[in-house]
Image (cartoon, rainbow, N blue to C red; front, top):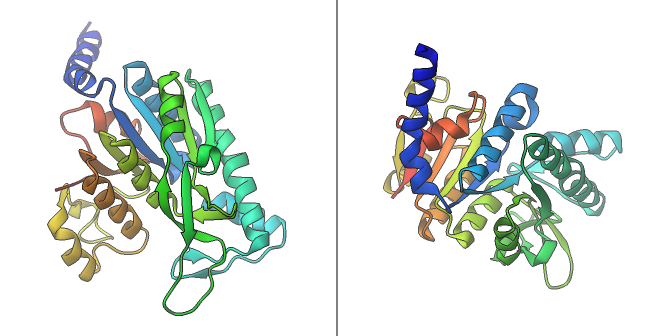
Length: 287
C-alpha cells in the first residue's frame, strides 16, 4: 500500500506541470548516451512518448557524430576537423546525409514507435524546413558543405504535430540552389525552438549541466542568467561543445522560448524529472 501511495504522490506532483504544458511545444536535442546506451535509449523514448500522451508536443532534433565517423571509416574516407567542425567535402556530405537522414533518423523513429508513439522522420531539406549558407571562417579554411541556418520554415513541423505525431529531425539543410549543408545539431535545435516559439528547449548531454569546474559535478550551476554567459565564456567555464548549446539557448530565449535547459541524459528518465518534478535537474539558462 505504501508503494501505491508514493506513486500517487508522484502523479500529484506532476499534475500542475501536465496542466501547465498541455498543448505546448518542447524541442528536445537528442544526443550523448541517450542515443547509445540501450537502457537509457528506451527510457528516453518512453519519456518523449509520455509527453505526447499528456498533451504536449515534443519535437526531436538529433545529431549523429559517432555514426558518421563509423561510416566514413568503413568507406575509407578520412575525417578532418577544424575549430571543432568537420571538413565536409562532396564525398563526406553524401555519407553524412545517408547516415543522418537515413540510419540514425529512422533508428530514433523506430525507437519512439516501439515505445508506443507515432513518430515521423524528417530532415531540414523536407518542406524547406532549414535553409542555410556556407560558414566562412576568417582564417581562409574551406569547410566545404558546413552551413549555418538562415531561414526556418516550420510549417511542416506544425503539420506533423497537429496530426498527433512526433517529428524527428536530422540537421541537414538546403539552399535556393539545391546544395546540401551539414548543420550543427545544437544550433538547429535552437533555431527551430525559436521559430516554433517553443515553451522549452532541452539539451540531453553527457554532463550534469554547466559546471564551474568541468571535473567536479558538485560545481553544477543550477541557473545560468543571460548576463553571465560572456564572463563565463571568457573564463573558460563555457567551452568546447558547451558553446553551441549555450548559444542555441540564448537564441531561443531571444525569440520568445520561455525556458532552456541543459540536462544529464545519462540519468534515468531525465526528461520526466526535468519537466514534471519540483526539483528538476541540470542547468536552467534564462534571462
